[in-house]
Every structure is written in structure tokens, then in C-alpha cells.
Amino acid sequence: MKKLKRITSALGILSLLVIVLTACGSRKSLSQQDVLQNDRANNTITWGVKADTKLFGLMDVKDNQVKGFDVDIAKAVTKRVLGKNGHAKFVQVTSQTRIPLLKNGNIDAIIATMTITPEREKQVDFSQSYFDAGQSLLVKEGSSIKSVKDLNKPGTKVLGVTGANSVANIKKFAPKARVLELSDYAQAMTALKSGQGAALTTDNGILYGMATQNPGYQVVGGAFTKEPYGIAINKGQGDFKAEVNKALKEIEADGTYNRILKKWFGNVPGFDYKEAAR
Ligand code: GLU
Image (cartoon, rainbow, N blue to C red; front, top):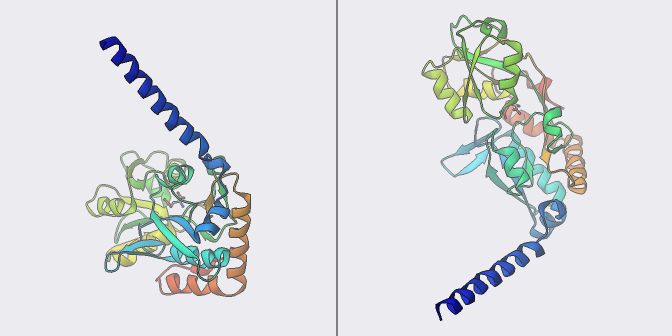
């Protein structure tokens, strides 16, 4: 009798497994799904944006909305791709989580201060670039660090964020420095303020945003790399990518892009945003 029970329960588990597996099999895998078609059906594009990066994507605790240049570009692109009533949904990403979230299908596109690099192009596709940043340094006012060369000494600590290409770049430009990686820009700024590093390094636009929020800190050393930002999209989504590129061209042509650029960077002391404009 016991044996019979065991056999029936084993059969039960087996049939459950078959049901689950069939259910999974009938769902299209991510690479088979058409993002543009899905987004049109739901009238929504889901964007991965930063939420800790002033000027590009920053959470406003007053109304729980992310705000910034990337967010506004995403909204404008959404309206061009889906129509006037198209909805842009925002999911918070960090430099480290953005590619995995895209590849897992949690988001349709990344618009998050992301440089188009050959390594990343092996994993994801990029739109045309929409902003030309360059890597720079943020230091305490009066610091002896004036340029990236000053960091190239043993014992000098530089702060960066995991998943940012700025970390690899600094290893190239100041190989003797030690890089301390934090998980996001808010934490990197806290680390700079508590004296854990001589400088914080990332793109100039991001650093100018931090400088406006943190009196007593300044951007130095000019831009020592070129960081063209692109919108990242999963490979195999050619129709969606074409629509995003078309939308970017349209917002450049009709003045929307310049309006958004001026809104976010027009009053940032020291930042020549016209150099970054497309
Ligand atoms: N643009 C650089 C990058 O894509 C640094 C900014 C960031 O961490 O997002 O890695």
C-alpha cells in the first residue's frame, strides 16, 4: 500500500513538472519577442533610468518621480514612437544593473548616462549617440589634484562606481592609483565627503550635477576621454531600434532636443553643454 502511495505521488509530481514545462515552453523566449510590437500593444515603453544622478535621472522624493535629461529624452522619444498618448514607464537602474535588467527583459531600453563602447556593443545594441560627455574629476576645493596625472601615484585613492567604464579608464590614465568602487553615485559622493578618496571620477555632466548639490567641491582636469551616450536596446530588436533612432532625429530637428538640453544644462556653472550637444 505504501509503495502504491509513493508511486502515485511520484506520478503526481511528474505530471506537475510536465504542465509547468509546457507552460514555459509555450511562452516566447525574450529573443523571439518583438519589443516594438509589445510596446505598441501596451502603449508603454519601459525605460531603465538612473535615480541617483542629478541632471540625468534623479528621484524627487517630493512626488516620487525621476527627473533629468535622460528622463525627458525618454519621454520625448516615447511620444514619437507610440504617439501623443504613449506612456513612458521608468525603472531604476545603476551602472552595474542596467545591462542584466535589459537582457532579462525587465526593461525595453536603457537611457542612463551609458557610453557606447565596443565591449558593450558585444552584448547590446545602441541607438545613435544623443549626448557627448567626457570623463573628469570631482575634488574638494583647494585639493592638490588638478588633473588625472596627479592621481598617478601609489597610495592615491580614487572613487568610482561599479559597472561604470570610468573605473577601467582611470586604471589606464592613472595606473598607479588605487580605485575604490562604490555601488552608485550617491554612495561615491558620500565616500568622497568622508575622505575615503582624493577624487571621484566619472563623466563631466554627472560631476557638475554633484558639484551644484555639494558646495565646496569642484570639477577639475577637463575631459580626458570621450563618452558618447547611447540608448541601449537588446540585440535582435531592429524595428524598435530603427524607431528610436527616427525619434531621436525628429526631436533634434523640431527643437525638442535643444529645449530639453537647455532646461537641464543651461544654468550649470562651468559646464559647456554646447560641446555635449548632438
Ligand atoms: N558613461 C559612463 C558609463 O557608461 C559613466 C557613467 C555611468 O556610470 O553611467 O559607464
